[in-house]
Length: 299
Image (cartoon, rainbow, N blue to C red; front, side, top):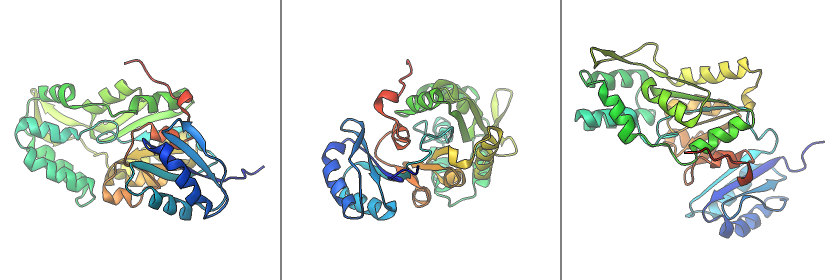
């Protein structure tokens, strides 16, 4: 039998308790709604919807304007995804590693603006990566370990996201346009099943200023998603994809649940769902997980 409420308005906010009443009232003006279903007390709730979600979503966001709330609409069916593909930098971790390498090299002012423009989709990714890596020529390879130890921090909720989805049968992938030195370590620290990234070439203990080919870019991330789904007999509707920049656009718009995480404008405009105020646990709430379902790995 078809679900009587085919859509869900999902709300995550530190102010969720105060927003619940006004948001339900706003939703009721645009069609029948069910009762609020709390996923996390005073933090996250679902509001099942009978009608098409777009007018309700717009009304809810208008009511919550000014509040630090992530409000998204998702289909009620097939909410819990069986494949997760995630970007790494500024998504699972809180920095862009190439900018931190540049900082140690004393040239952050030359590299960081290129990184920002690339993430906004203003510059070709491959061209920009080659240009930035060339500026790092001669940097001691030991700097990579120093950056990882001193500058790379796992974002709140990342470990819980991966552990919870894996415990429920999800295959998890960390696919980065950054460098394998960092991606391998972050994947291991968070528990991802697999990782892919670019390779910094090193000779005699120093960066050569070149990156291994082929470069992993937007198209490669989409290919990784398609290949993983095919290998596991899944459809793209069974996948969740999350990232923050233009390089993540293709995989996020292709996945059944595509999420922009504190996204750059080009991605924010296209992503079906957006997390801009809360942490990575929100991707679990978007799938209908409750606090009692969330696994908190040991430090």
